[in-house]
Image 1 (cartoon, chains in turn orange, cyan):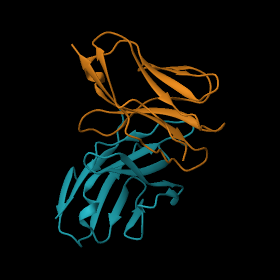
Image 2 (cartoon, chains in turn orange, green):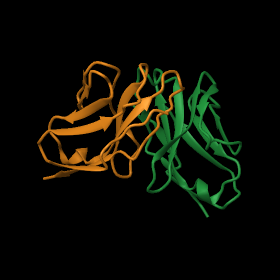
Image 3 (cartoon, one colour):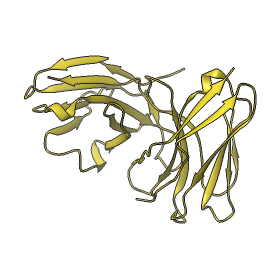
Length: 111
Length: 115
């Protein structure tokens, strides 16, 4: 399974942008890049996903490097509610919905 | 907003007992999944289910585990003879399209404690 590498933890101040990095140097051409987050005592929650182009949605932006070996999740204005563990995950094409979660990045947001 | 619901929220059982965890996926979704998370550890994939059959399963999903969609709305995970190491939070998820193009919606989880 293709692996991702993320920092164990990051800190941010409320209302400031947050850039969460992810390295996935062994990504293959058909692997999608997914980001999920898990708030304390809750199930994982979808944030965003993409293949090659940068993606934006109401929660975040995903910037994908041209060689696809890394990506960055951007939260434009962090709120206290964004404190969570953020997972960068590669899905293997046509492998039946198997997300392989790593340890993720624990984001703390200071008021 | 539609959501995936799971019951029970917490179940305590004795080792060797059978357990059924229930999930009601979002109504127009076609793909269904079970994941689990042992306390303090990573979220782990168990099984995916589409068109009334298992699409993919992990090595954790051995003969003690089974899934069923008995009536078109519920999606169940059965553990035939629970072991201590089955204690975990079990998450059900569903999606409208395949994972590559869609998002998974997770439930709040069912906590299983095996004594």
